Length: 230
Image (cartoon, rainbow, N blue to C red; front, top):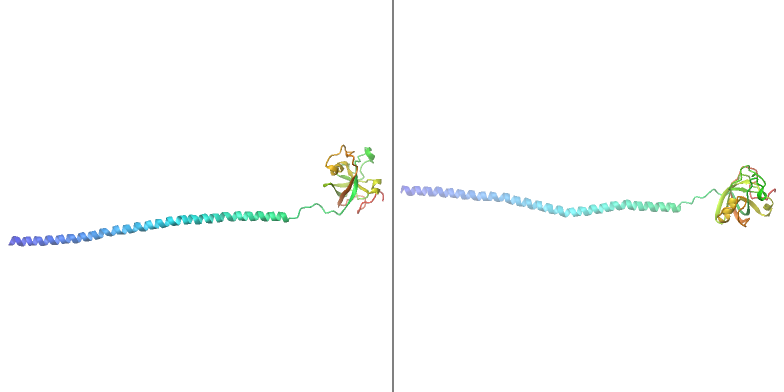
């Protein structure tokens, strides 16, 4: 009987111990599952964030690309506008012209080269005191050193009145004598055979246009050319 009592006590103690162990096991199992669940949820959240970042990244690139493209187009557009503006200014800008003519008209011109040689009726040194040269003209009446532009066949030369002439021909409407180089250039763009001869059979330029650009300070009369000695 004493032995049965001992067995009953042992059985009770063992049962209690087993029950305690079961409770502890359940609790342990419950505690062990919690970190796993938390860890799973954290990884899922991280994965979701990474997925969202991947989705947003191309969009940002597209936006950046669009912004860069727009930024690059703006200067090009401005440059194009600037070029168009400059072109418009160039087209609208007035063409530069030479001095305005004080007096103009047409006449028949002959040629000369007076250097004291006596060739072709050479009467000696030019009346202005300046040596004979290209661009020196002779007028029967204009003030010496008057600046004159002459035009013929689309070619022009600007020179000055440095001598008197032509003489008697001026009474027949020939109101200018041109140096041989100017005469030949206006005629056909060529050069004279020599400074005394133009080198062509043509001795006059009819319908020559003249323009007085500046009156000279030498002796003579301003205004339309007058025949020699008048």
